[in-house]
Structures are given as C-alpha cells and as structure tokens.
Image 1: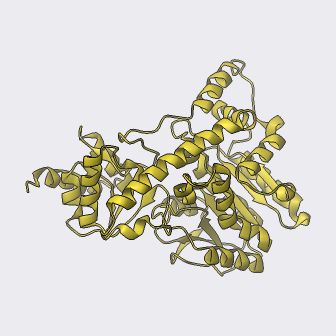
Image 2 (image 1 turned 135 degrees about the vertical axis):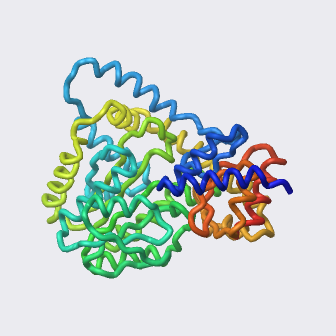
Image 3 (image 1 turned 180 degrees about the horizontal axis):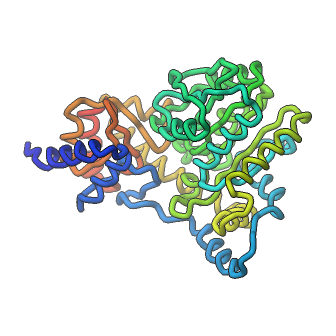
Length: 405
C-alpha cells in the first residue's frame, strides 16, 4: 500500500502540533488543505455529503426581520418575552407543568458555552466555599478553560463518577458525553442527584444534546416520546431528589444554529422557595456582568422564534435527530463484528465516539483522506461524517475499525 499521502499529512500534523495548535483545529486545518478530505473532526451536524446541515430556516427568517427592526440605535432585549419564553423552554424540555414555578430562566450569550460558564459563575457566587470544578474524564476540554477563567482549580473524576465533596462543583453532562458518546446509566444519574441533595451543593448540568441519546428510537417513537424519555433519564432524578441544579442548554446542535450562535438557555431549579431572592439576584448579577442583559439581534430573534414558532423549531430539532439516527444505524450495521461494534449499542449515542487507536492509526486514516481528532491514544470522530455513498461508507468504517477499538 502506498502510504506517502498519509505520511505527508502526519508530518504536517506534527508540525502544527509543535506550534501549540489545538488538536481540534489541526483536524480542521488538515481537512481544508485536502480537496478530497472528509471532516470527521468537526463538531457540527453534517449531511451525507460531508457538508454542514443547513442553518435553521426558522431562525434565519427571524434574524432578517430583527436586523431590520434594529435600525434605531437603542438598547434592546427580550424582557417582555421572558415569561412566555420560560414556558416554551420548559415545554421543549418536557418538564411537567407542576414544576414550572420553580424554574428561573436567563439568556447568556455565546450559546451553550456561555450557559455553562454563567452557570459556574452563579454557583460560585452562591457557594464561595467551593474552589474546585469537578469534571468527568474524557469530558469537554473547555471545562478546564472555564475553571481557569473562574479562578478555581479543576479535578477530573472517573467516567461513572458521583462527586461527593462539598468544596467541589460537579459539572455533569446531561446527555451523551461530548467527546465519547457514553450515555450514563440511570442508576448513576440517580445517585448523583441524591448525593447533591444530601450535600446541599449546586450541580451544573451541561445539556448540549437534548434528546440525542434516544435519536435511534425515531422510527418507532414520536419526537414527544423521545424528549420525554430524555427528561426522565437526565433531569427528573434531580427534581425528584430536590437538588439545586443549574441547567445549561445549548441550541446549536438541536436546531443547527452554529453559524448564528444564538444565546444559550440557563435554567435554575429552585427546590426551596426561600432561596428564590438570593438565586434570582445571583442570576441577574451574572447576566449583567456578561453584558447579556442587552442582547444582540440574533438572541432577540431566537427568543421570538422560540415563542412564536415553537413547532417549526421542534420540527428542525427532529430533523437533526433523524440525521443522527441514520448515521448511527449505518455505523452499527457496517461495524458489526469489528472492535468498534460496542460503540454503537444503546450504551452510546450522540454526535461523537472516541475509541482508543493503534499507534499507526493516523498514518492509515489520513491516507484515506479522513480527518478525525487524534489526541494521545484516542481518535475522536463525528458519526454524522459518514457518507451516503454505500461503497465509500463501508470503506471508511472498515479503515476506522481496523485501527480503532
């Protein structure tokens, strides 16, 4: 086999790494240089031709209108919509109506990342004794940067961890894990909720992939049923146990709004009514400090779309789940009997998988014009990168399966 192309790409990857460039950026840079490149490293929803899925048409309409309405140079925000918007977000998350009064909503800028960062800031304001951010191993790399920005330490915990330390703020991924796709078992999530309630410490739930863990059920169950199952697995245990949690929800994966970067949704659940004033003040302070209390037009447009055209946005979310389901099913079929087969059972879901890989993996995978994210001994890949072309898809899965496990 002629591996000269793979060798040249691997050499360029090493050169970029020596310059301190992040592994995610390296994958993107390498792919852009290759006219035949297949981008398995990018963190967005992809179509079967390897191109990004189309941006939410609903939000684009509202953005165009909002920009036109922004001609006067005034401060503008969504304050008059907040009650209606809160109900819409809670409805989307399938949270039962009898709990709605116990939730407070704010709209941090910068999508899901901004929501997580703001959630951490609020938790630290309310609990100044906390000095460590507790994160799951192989979790989202940005958590370490968020901890540094907040001037606290961070500590990695094992994959199935239950953080049981009053000076540690747990950040749990409330859905398939970014970067591995692991779906935490129900008993682990219940234990996390029970422990948080007993310690009386806040918990940050990072919900970047609402409903994604059950996308595979799309053919047999309705969108409503999928979202209810996601709520019952990820959120209900914390409500049942009476734990105080900050739910940071990202709209970018669900509604394919990467290019527009609308606000994130940050919901605070208040199990104890006596804390409402203190928590509301902390939320207001955090949003004011971020400069998010006066919003850019895309945030205002998103708030209006979410309240006025909720059904259309949910239909777009369903389309994202359907694309993921098609991709996961193809991987499951084509990887059957291979070392990667277990990654496409119901224990894993979502946009990413992060298998271990052999030392020679980059050479052979690059040689086939495929660009996942290589980091140490792992190969993170975006499952929606799989092509519609059957011959090409089989070839791609075969290469990954031979060098990843």
